Structures are given as C-alpha cells and as structure tokens.
Image (cartoon, rainbow, N blue to C red; front, top):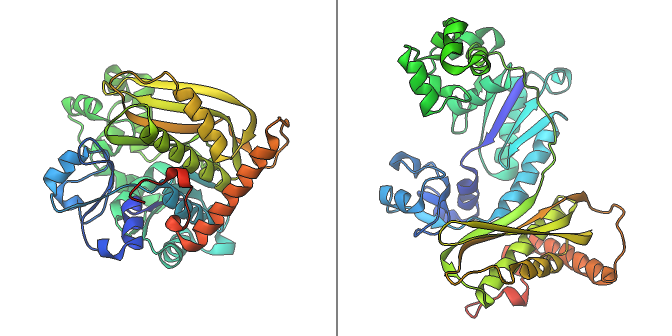
Length: 385
C-alpha cells in the first residue's frame, strides 16, 4: 500500500506557528505586492480565491485584509528535514515530491508498525506533536489514487481507498483529476462526451487514440482504471540547491544588489551544510525588466560549503552582466553537488575555505539554539539594522 503525505498550506502554516499573531488570519507567503507571486496561501485566505502561483497583486484584490509575509526558505527547509525524519521511521521507501510532501511504500511493514491506516494516523499525530503542523494523508494501492485521496481529505485529513474499491472511487471523479489532463485535453475529452474517469475507463481505446495518440490514450485509460505502474523511488538526489529573490524595484550593480547576492549565497551555503553536501560549481541567475534571463556558471577549484567563497564567485560572475535598466531578480545556486567530507583536491586557499566552513557550522548552531536573528554577518546589515 502507498501513503501520500502532504503538509497542509506548509509555508503559511509555519509562519502562523512561529508568529501567533497570524493565527486565524488570512496569510499570503510570497514576494512583494507590486510584482511578486503567491508562494502559499493559508486556509483562511483560500475562501477568497487566493491560491499559490497567483500574482500577489491579484490575491490582494481578492483579499485586501490578507497579511503578506516574505518566505523564509531556511526555516521551511529545517522543518522539512524533521518531517522527513518522521517518515523515515516507518519505511526506507520514502520518495520526496517536494519540500512538504512525499510518497511512502509501507508494504511489508505491517508486522512492525501495523496496517497502513494506523501508520498514516501515527504520522499525522507526530507531525502535530513534533512540528506543531497538520498533515493530510491519502492511502491507496497506487500512487495516483493515494494523491487524489490526500486532496479529498484536506485539510488535516486521512482518506483511505481500499484496493477493491479503487475503480468505484475513481469512476465519478471529473476528468481533470487525471495526470496529464489540462484545459486542452479536457476539451478533447468533453467533445466526445467524456466527463468522468469512469467514462474514460469504459471508452473504446481506439477512439481515444484517434483523438489523443496511442500512448497518451493508453496512459489516461490505465489511470482512470486505477492502474499506475510507478513505484516509490526513494531519495532522488537533488541536482542543485539555490536561493533567489524578485526585487520590489529594479536594482543596478552596487552595494544593495551585491548585499542581496551575498545573502543568497549564505542561504545556499547553509542549506548545503544542513544536507551534508558541498558545491562543485556556482551559478548566478539574473532577470532583467524585460524578463530576459541570464545565467553564468563557474566550476570551483575544490567543492565547498563556505558562504563567503560561494558569494565571492557569484559576485565575480556579476561583473559586466547588468545593463542600464538593472535587474528585477537575482539568484545563486550550487550545482555539481558532492557529499561533504569526501576527498577533494587541496588548493592554495584551503585554510581559508576550511575556516569559512567551520564558521558556517558555528553560525548554524547559534541560529538553531537562539533563532534566525541571533547572529548575522556585518556585511549583510543595513543602516536600519
């Protein structure tokens, strides 16, 4: 049996947990009102029509009383690590889908932990007690159905679809529930009279293939019958770790932009250390006011998790890349990730590199104990600070 576990309104819920004054109020996590995008909307904001990926300006028109909060990716990543640790206690077959959701294959663990619905209830209880958040869990025979079950139970739900009831459960659902069915495909299906998954399951495959192509038709019909051959694939390695920011106003090369890029590099370095990885290369991303994206990449002489080193390379990549109109977004990413502590070629700046990494670990420990604002590099402080 497969479990799909999803933390409810994750970013917004973490903000409401950490800031009691936000509890019970509509909260939007994301960029600036002027040109940002909603990253997450609390359940208090959703009845007004606010959703993730919506322009923040549009969300504020729908819900003017909403409180806009800037995202704290480092805080969310720290919670996500604890969430993953809870899941790992029940099965080694955990497939993270994003920072706040995962599939679990609990087949064969029943003698140790009990039936799947008992495991699901235990995970929900631990998320509430240890993380002070709520999780929704779907339980089904295959991944596709488990994810739908989670959505049916939200928020704070536990929805179980017994294997022998899979087709009955799916039959009445609208065609938009199928993976791979967007507006265009939905129109094609409705043009031939198909409104539900049950109708897709019963429709002649040749007729579907004539409209959608053989491969797509076969995939959709299999899913509509509850047939999903995908297995839970544990620990798909991250390709990169990054941090980026869209600015309220366009920035030009100068102290402010360089401070923002340095801060992004420091966030990337912290995430590298917490995941016990190092960067073999640094990528700088810039987006100009016309939305043209520039990326520049440099391979490092030796892998590192030193924020100062990553920032230095990012700022060198910045040289000469900003036009007269400035940039609306910048981002720093670490790529060519390697396990920390592995063998690496020594370079002339190895002592400085090791000193920077040790300092980073110390900063992490201070922030873990006393909070994010307990310590900061002086070069990142503003006059207001």
